Length: 160
Image 1 (spheres, helix red, strand yellow):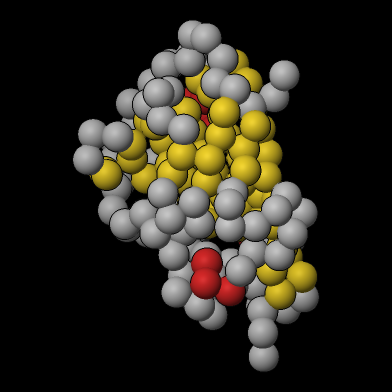
Image 2: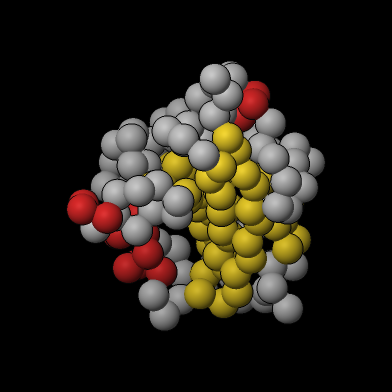
C-alpha cells in the first residue's frame, strides 16, 4: 500500500489555490500523510514541476520544495512553513531550483503546469549538511532506502 499524501488546500488533480503561488502569498500549503510503514527512520517531501521547458539545460523538472529529515511520527507539514534550512529539530529544507531553501510556489511562464508533491518513507536519515541538500543529492542519498512512497498532484495556470 502506498503512503497516502493529501492536502486540505486542494484535491488530487485539482487546481492549487492562488494563495500558494507566486501570484498570491507564495506560502506552502498544508501537506498531510498517513500510512507510514514500520521501520521508517525519516520522511522526505518534494514538490516538482515536470512541465518546465528546460531541455537545453537537461533539467528534468523544476524543484519547488524539498523537506527532509522529517520525523516518522509527524503526520503533516503546516501551511506557511517558514523559509530556512533548519526548522527546529523537526525537519530540514533543501535547495530549490530557485537556489534557495524553503518553499517556492507555482509560477509557470505559460500554460497549465502540473505540480507533484511526492513523499518518501526511508529506512535511514539522510544526514545531508544544511545548505547542500540539492535535488540530486537528496535523490542520490535516498537510493536503496525507500520503504514506500506516495504522490499528490495539483495544477496551476498563471493569471494575466
